[in-house]
Length: 470
Image (cartoon, rainbow, N blue to C red; front, side, top):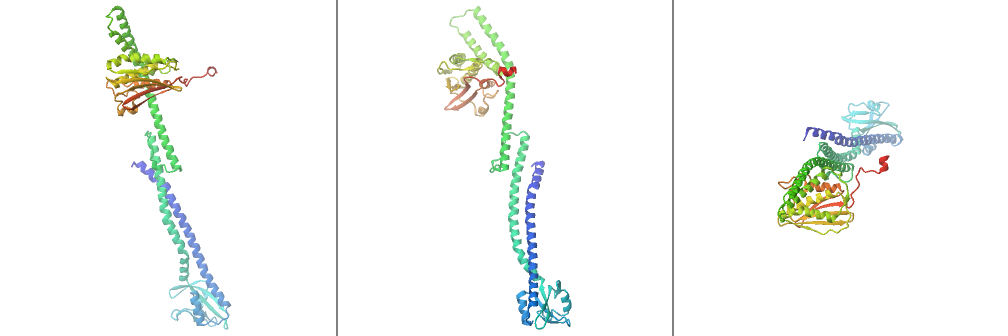
């Protein structure tokens, strides 16, 4: 673990887990202490009240005190009794053993009324009462403090037991709950740090997204942020690559167009000067190859300067016929058969004719290369609602699995001599018309489809004349 991550973990643990567990512990201890103090106070008050009631009962009683009476009182109350004569200061009847009272002054005990005294190693609380029997006598009621403490403990221990059980349950549960919460927050914090470092597209584990609590919503938001940033980065990279590709294609196409134009002029001049045999079609084949090259150059120009060409109404049968005528020589040379399905006339299509023709030509040329000798390439057309689809299908082996996700990206190709611009040109033309390029593989055939709207959308920066004037 990175040192800074360790410090963050300890800090979050210290800020979250320890305060929560400490507050629970402090609250329980405070409640227990108050309950124990209150119970002890009430127990002592009850013991003293019992002593006072005994003293009051002796004062109201007119029964002569005797040893059996004192022994009975001792058994009932748990206190010791001593009859003291105020006249001569001597002790009379008592429940103490004679050896216990040896060396004690009854007058001193009587003077300690309301306080504690030490007798034979035991502490007693001294109470004093005046008996109104036949012979009025002073009775000292000595309640053992130990019994009072025992009574207090018996009153307090249930509270202490409940508190101990509560702490034994709450502290581990609070520690576990806050620790899990801290771990989830630490995982979110580390993931945000990774996003800040540029690791977009990574998602937090589903185990952190529990229910619909606040942290679960935070995890969902962080995952959405990561996905959005990944998409934006991919879009930015693709846009930059497209821009660079357009610049490269424009310069490359300009030079190629000059070369193609010069070669075409040279062939036309040769035809006028030299009349060859009537059955010699070599120059025608050369012209066809130059036408194909011109179409590819036109596609590169469309890729380099999108939106510059004007849109016109396109005659679909004528467009497809031109595509078949341009790609026929390449198919004958490769030993591939091209099948063109009939296209109905009168289907409306508005677009950039040269760009669309160059895109379809690129798809057909790729299909010819993929099908190879003895293969079949099918060019089909479909009109579904406001959209028009051009489908080029071949029975070749299809693209390699490693190139499938990025096959339409610029400079991605499986051909040793290819540069990977044909499908990029086709996709750029489709997107320029407000459509898309897709492909699929099934039943031993590969299909590339350009789908465009019958009428392309207006440019995003177009504005009404009155707004421009304003």
